[in-house]
Image (cartoon, rainbow, N blue to C red; front, side, top):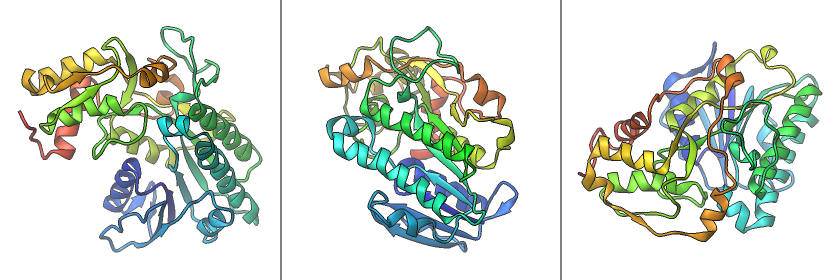
Length: 327
């Protein structure tokens, strides 16, 4: 089995590759070859699997054709310009998130000759816009309020139509905000949800730019990888024509996040959070969804690793900090 991962140098991409290498197989098939792409060269894993790493911009005309020329069996499309950056740089967001996605989809389509890979597309809960009901069900309309959400919503429509036409077998997964993200902060507007936990656990100060009343939908990196693997191996005959699914998660206010941090790590760790309101972030967050039903995804076998927000923090300490934190 040949697997192509776009965005393989990103946090979720790296964790996905680590899991694929560790397992050595995807579903019932042994992995024999992997192609890893990102704008910077992804790290090459230590494995007996044949791995090719490719640095380059998949939204440059002709680049996507090269990526799929070897007919990978499964394609994970994780490449994207994240929310805050897509809002600040209109042209860049549309070029990568929309034009690049269309180029990838067309590159697969134009191979023809019966080629029909499984294509997993990472969308976002940003495809939804206010006003919201108390709990967002699977029938709630996609009406994004930001450029990033608009770009992802268009990608979802393309994925469903290309799948309907038989060009590939697509599954779109709307990821919750991934928390706690390891590594350095990125340009996602949602980054503070992780920053206010990750940095204090590492002995550093963190800035909280919004009110503690802000509520949001979260899942761990472990769960994100699990979603991707299930999307790549599930029976798509059961999904029907609606190919895009909101993933399960946990809802919590910022105040509840901080309370969980205090329970798991103590008051001194939580005291490293500084309140510095940021009108730009506050404005973006005001249009974000807060909690979902995710009934279809659960019925189709998608599950989370975490049951409480305390679990989210403990998973980060276990996976990223070797079981220890700076008290």
